[in-house]
Length: 443
Image 1 (cartoon, rainbow, N blue to C red):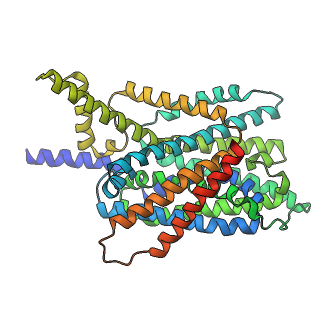
Image 2: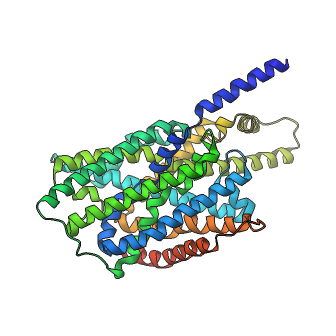
Image 3: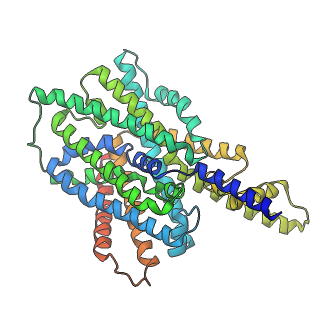
């Protein structure tokens, strides 16, 4: 009997390991979660602030993102529990109320990013159709994207993206190469200038967008937990972030100095050759489509957990009120789901509800909300600046610093006080001034 139990346990462990990602897969997953919409809007705001000043601004933002990711990973490594979420860390260090606030803020930022993705997909579709003399309204283009986007939102397992993230990254790189090729053609005829160096006035048009070039902080812990050896992830995350930062700043400097005043809010629209423009838009659209559900995954996970908790409390209350000895079918369903979540590690981060219908309802309502807001947004760069300035600064910089300070307050090791100070200064300036600047343009 004991041998049978050992054999069954080995089979389960082997099944779990098959779904775990390698360091290489986690590297591409994390790069892909950072190379989103921000990188193709960055050249536009880079031209606004000037080439030299954009580099000066980007360095502390990149440093803050790298260190805040490290802070979360260090806490998760020290806690050493399975499938830890950002909210779990907040709850342990700041308390339950702050964990609830964090969950809501994460949902809002991730929904904001998905809205930005949809705006890009819609505008790309309209631009591509325009090249073949087909004119469509924004609403018509949004409805067409439904056919592609909606099925992706029902992906329930993060390991689905282990291979697709790599191909999405290659599509993004191919799109960037087309931009560089077009820039090279313009350089060959003398359209390349370094005269636009510093414009202090537009500083806080830049900061929020730059923060969203580091948008993958919410996937730090899910991707870490998806690895076979999660304690390797700190170095993997550093390599991924440095790669993403290098691509972002290099592309923005080259394209903004080449296109100059012709730099569009989405840099792909600046490409002069219509065929190359359409190809680049298709490639980057594929890349974002593969990123969209990866970004939506943490938000959906949080929302489903909120529903699950409320349903359990409601059912338990009714059971007590009715003083019944029989367990309700819904209660049994949730209880069985909880047992499976506890027993099977591989499914614990992939699904919350066993009830597929409830999942479909939650995700459908979420997508309807995202589509409605996307239709109302007038300007992508200012919207990204607002999202990055408010939620990016709070969630990617402030909270990781605060929880790291509290969690390691009794540690005998040296505290990175200077790092804390840099990150908090960057985040406070972005929240106050970046939000004010973006609201001025949106309202």
